[in-house]
Amino acid sequence: MTATATATATTPVEKTGARTPEAAGVIENARERIDALDDRIIGLVQERMAVSAVIQEARITSGGRRVNLSREMEILAHYRDALGKPGTALAMTLLELSRGRV
Image (tube, rainbow, N blue to C red; front, side, top):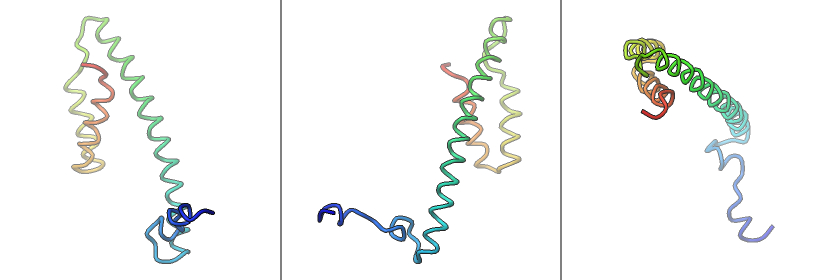
C-alpha cells in the first residue's frame, strides 16, 4: 500500500463512527440491510409511478383531469396517520414523482 492509500484508508470503526470493532460490525451489517431496503423502496416507488401513469392515462382518455385532488388528500392523510408529520412530506414527494410532468 502506498503512503497515500494508507492515509485515506479507514478502519471499520472509523468508517462507522463506532467505538468498538463489535459495534462497527453491527453497524456495517445494519447498513447493508438498509441499502437492500432502499433498493426495494426505489423499485416500489418506480412501480407506483408506472401504475399512476396508467391511472392518469385512463382518466385523461375518458375526458377527466389528470390529477384527482380528493384522492391525493386521502393518500396524504394515510401517510400522516401512519408516519406522523414526516409522512405527509413523504407522501407529497411520492405524489410529485407519480404525477409525472404537470
